[in-house]
Length: 104
Length: 104
Image 1 (cartoon, helix red, strand yellow):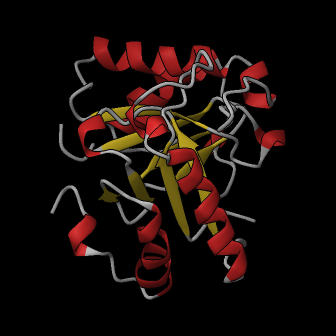
Image 2 (image 1 turned 90 degrees about the vertical axis):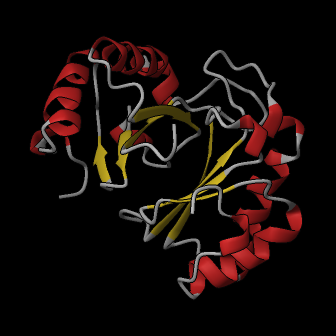
């Protein structure tokens, strides 16, 4: 894979010292990472779209936070039920989802 | 801070299970994260530029890997000596550094 067409970053509160602690981590972010990966595999999009877990994005009150680059779209309070919608509408149809966006 | 003007991602091989293991982590990536943060603070850029550590970016042979979004510029084999150059030339002057780029 070269540069991904879309790059999904999911805050998993991964600290550089390895500590697993933080708002997103406590709110099911690890599960979100896995769900994004599975959904992409099922839709055969894994070759074009990358999912990467991150350290704290410093807007914990909006967590769990998901960013899609290079689109620069920031989603907040993302839950399991939003994963399929993000993949289908934003990733596949290129229509970012208004109601989940932190910055409009 | 709203959306950062530039967002620097540094692979620190942070796994979602908290394990600290992987090529970038073994090659001083944690130190790189801290150096980027310090350099930004010294130049008073912390309000506009965010640095975030990530999990594996799946191109370990090119590590340590640093990505600058939304520019979508991927740097490989980044070392301590490159941090100042990336900040000065790419972040401040908007001139991505050719010699460090993985994808041209």
